Amino acid sequence: MKRLPILIVLFSLISACGDSERARQAKFFAFGTEIDVSLYGVDNQTAENTVDALEAAFNNVNNTWHAWQPSTLTRINDAIASGEPIQVEADVAAVITQAAEYAQDSQHLFNPAAGKLFEVWGYHQDNWFESRPPPSQESIDIWLHAAPTMQAIRIEDGTLTSDNKMVKLGFGGFAKGTAVDAAINALKQLDIENAIINIGGDLRAIGSHGDRPWRIGIRHPRKEGGMMASVAIDHDQSVFTSGDYERYFTYEGKRYPHIIDPRTGYPATETISVTVIHQQAARADAAATALVVAGAEWPQIAASMGIDHVMLMRADGQIEMTPAMAEQVRLIDPSQQPLIRQITTP
Image 1 (cartoon, one colour):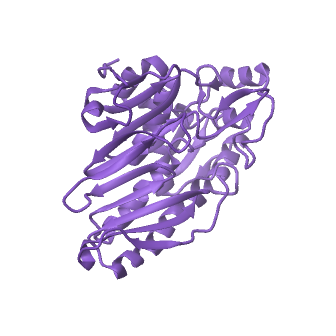
Image 2 (cartoon, rainbow, N blue to C red):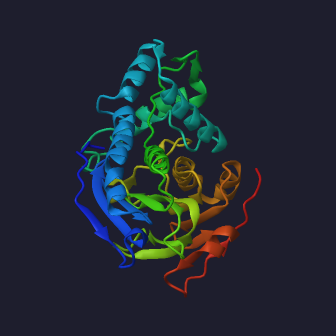
Image 3 (cartoon, rainbow, N blue to C red):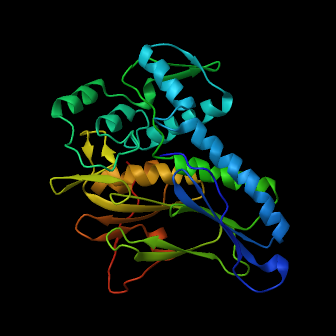
């Protein structure tokens, strides 16, 4: 996640009604990806004034949680590796506690303590996409034997400690969601009620687009530039997708995706992509990752994470979804028959 300067390149009008009834769109860069901001029902000056607030929100998340470039997170991981306690600010402790909650709810299929496993696979570096041999079974077994989870993290009176030196925190599984939530909070503080923050295809929307809901396209995981479905969202909802097409490397013709199953130490292969809808972007982000790992067991994990809107594409191309998602989503290919699966309590 190479840091790029945030640069506004566009503020355009999407409709041609009265000044305050126009939807305005801004594009800029952070987290090494394009971020789109759509605002409805504000004048041009108010729209322009959001730029500084959003820049601060995204930069703060990037500077705090970058997994391998110098950041608050790398300092925390250095302390854990050396067995030393470290003081953490209240906002940092809150995010770590939130991550631990999601990990517990997911039965640790979302495992932010697995940074060393991702490091073994070569994903904690800027050239993660380059071809290379997969890691040795021995190096994976060492990590599996140590079994680091968020349960090994303790925060008391502002001091973080861990009794497992193999813990290495990495929040790639919900950093985008955390950033989007922070950005939406910044917009609300500016009294902006109707907006979308879209970061690389994942987003949170508040309010509506005038008298109609926001309509969002969901990317097809196997058709470059193609859409699998569309979904209408209203009021305050987040739409997050995780899949094997986002980050991967190939070696001798085999694809190695970046979503790793902490139970095996290898990339999850049963599922191509998972889309989740939930109000909170951070929880949606974490849940999408966990459900890719869960494979066929995803309804139980969705239930334990409090998620009832799920759409999943299996490795064989079959689409599965919950009844709630089936009511809200529209597949682009009407001939495709989704398998409806009920959320089940573990």
